[in-house]
Image (cartoon, rainbow, N blue to C red; front, side, top):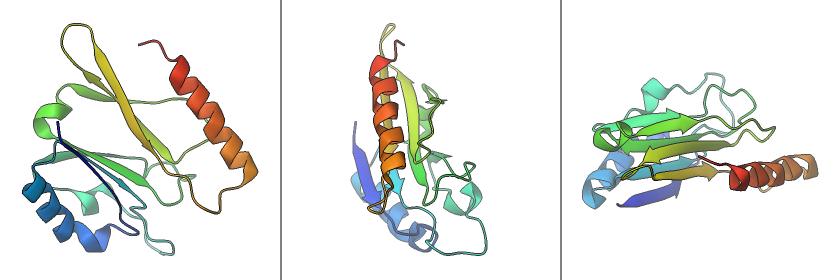
Length: 137
């Protein structure tokens, strides 16, 4: 399985580059942080971020998520993967559960922490880590 990660610092103007990167590397999973611009009057939508051959999952619907995260899965992998919602005050994250052989599952995700994160936000992130490591799936 090939996984790519990048910080886009606004993805809408880099979609052609992302498509080329995905094709050149034959990526199964692509994880992107900072998909939204820092300042914009218009909201970013998943429609703007579609990538040929991939299913997109994002945290764009969370108003608390300031810069946004996207996880792209190949259509084949998406058939075996579901988004996991984990109750937390930390919103800059996205979690997925992938069915493997037998009853095995792979939990994976992405967290984005801004360099200007507050102490309260950091504490919420630490609490999220604790919740994730305590999951029994």
